[in-house]
Image (tube, helix red, strand yellow):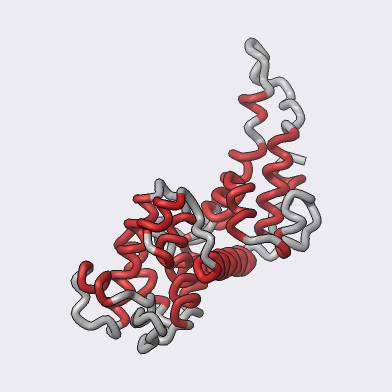
Length: 251
């Protein structure tokens, strides 16, 4: 995800994303030969359902859909897999300036934004990984020997040319680079990339999916919940009224 410096695009971008999802009716429901000035057909039920899922990601207490009603009682990675399209749109609606503002509230936020830009991944995702791995403690050491902010194993740190694993800049850059490589390796599958970050990509590939390790599932779950929380907070900061279906539908 690239961070842009354009101001005041939040509402327009969010509406554009949602309109693309739910108001495709001009293409889906328009019969060949219909006059250009004809009234648009009502939104397709699938589009409405997708909109409601997006709204549920933004505000799980909205009660607009039963599809995500059990979100709080089921693993986040299962919810994301079940509602991949709406989750992707929810994440994609993030405004660059709102993300930057959110990162100003996060320890090492400026450095995280810089490395995320460099490796073309969402800084809020990197922040969620750091928060889960080390609680932003640059001197953290795990019982397994993982080190620093992104809890890199010495071998991985060596592979990425890290001279001082406790240096925030080096640790964050190598960790973000590694995470980006996992996202590419697993074709953008966020759940599998995070599982691989914890358990190793080889184990994820050998098992053909999420490994049945409690630690890996807990790690993936914690990162995803923090990631969603960061995006909700970034959205709410500039869109206190959330999404308005009546406006999006032209009502």
